[in-house]
Image (cartoon, rainbow, N blue to C red; front, side, top):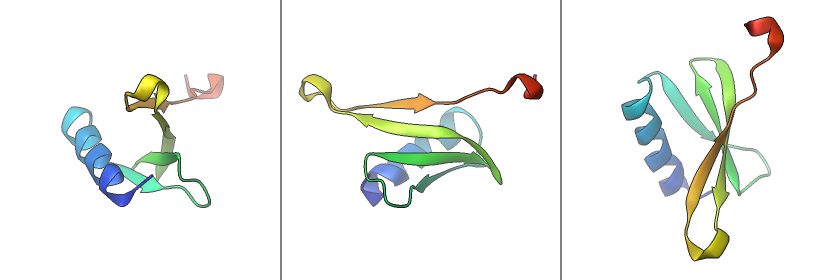
Length: 67
């Protein structure tokens, strides 16, 4: 994922959910970025280029022990 895309996603997550959210590039991956709330890992944002329309999918696992 390009740095410009990460900046746009970071601003979107901050504006929409929480100003403490941080979107970071993933090591050795260029099709996704990691999402954190402070130091806590929340999930991954993936690029979806299907049918020529670019969109982003956020995937977050919730563990049973966290509920």
